[in-house]
Length: 330
Ligand code: M7G
Image (cartoon, rainbow, N blue to C red; front, side):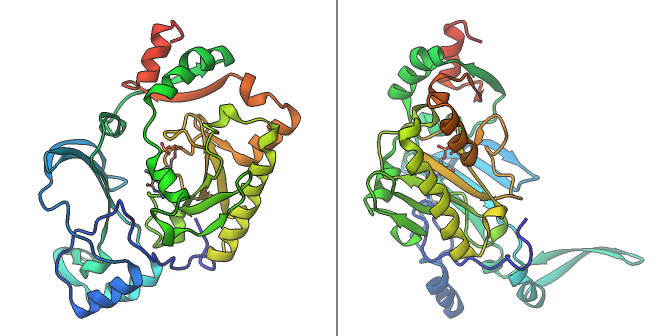
């Protein structure tokens, strides 16, 4: 967790193209807030027809829903956002309380907060592919052991055919989307990258800070492609990414977890930056590789990621898992 000194409101400066605010009316106060926090957009969810709840978590206050918008498949992610210390005074003074029960010194209430203090982070994928829908369905996972040969004969051919579109990545690199959200960019074609808030972060508090650094080089698919020739790129991302986060959010490197996923969902090299105390999905040992370790491994063994057996979890319905099964590797 970020400590109180470092906990600052990280104001969202633009609307996320995937987050569609579902409120329709605005008061003057709302308009002022809109200037500060991003613009209202058309409510594309007004006609959303729910087909199925793909998964949910009462603990994480999170729900993934499959449905249709204009007869096209869509996936909507609803997530209640964390409390913000800065907003507490207003929350207490401006809310109404409904008593549920009172007994001795104990009482419980339903607190009805002003709408702007009770927002739901909403991510919309539309039109969604079958892969998007599958991705959010609750599934059992299996740990896969991928040797160098498995990568060449099973994973690589599969990934080359079946990966999710990288259009959103190219939109960021070509300044066609999320331009105002960029925190730092290095334009160098070899070692350059764009650092910006991850789709999953609402930028309201630092406790769950989540940024991604997307490389300008377009042909590095994943960890498996990395060789010492990429060391300047990786070192640049690590150093400048940390510096930019210190400058913008006042979070020192010692409070950050900087890592790559293997397997990733999107096969264009990118690095995840989260706060150390935030247990983001995918930060566990079977999927996350610390960037600092990756750099050292490449320094000591140039073909480390080409030759090592790598382990990662795959969900039961993942096509890649089926390929491992068919090859007798599961
Ligand atoms: P990953 O390791 O390929 O897979 O990370 P994961 O999604 O299973 O973690 C891709 C990262 O990019 C994730 O953290 C996503 O939340 C993030 N991401 C995905 N999309 C489609 C976008 C987007 O359009 N904008 C931004 N800013 N981040 C995205």
